[in-house]
Amino acid sequence: MTSDNIQETDRLKEMEEEILSFIQTCINCRMCVPMCPTYEGWVTQSAFGRLAAINLHLKYGLGTEEELSRLLFDCATCRRCQERCKMLSTNVTPTDVIIKTRQLLARKALAKERDGS
Figure 1 (cartoon, rainbow, N blue to C red):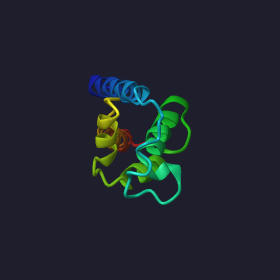
Figure 2 (tube, rainbow, N blue to C red):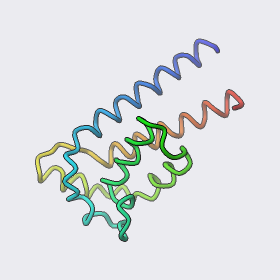
Figure 3 (spheres, rainbow, N blue to C red):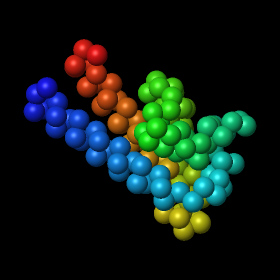
Figure 4 (tube, one colour):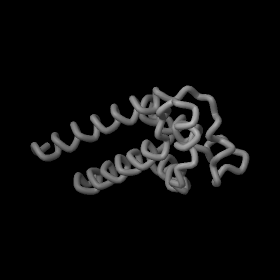
């Protein structure tokens, strides 16, 4: 493993920790669920469900990166959920977390491609 690979691995770990830290600020009120234009009855179609999926994947390895990626790229990034969180004074930024997790998954995919695994 080269020093560049080690640095990238460290950076990916830092991103994961930052994402998990943001997710922990969510109070699980689920007020974002009805605000989401992609919500059609499944909780994973809302910011709350997507944050829960990110949390479960990063902490416990639940689901594949491909499954998580599909969930996250279904998000319209309209930020309605963030407006609701701001109104509730929770200071949670679900859309930013979703975008950052998309970036994390893309970087992981590139690292795997470079390593040939």
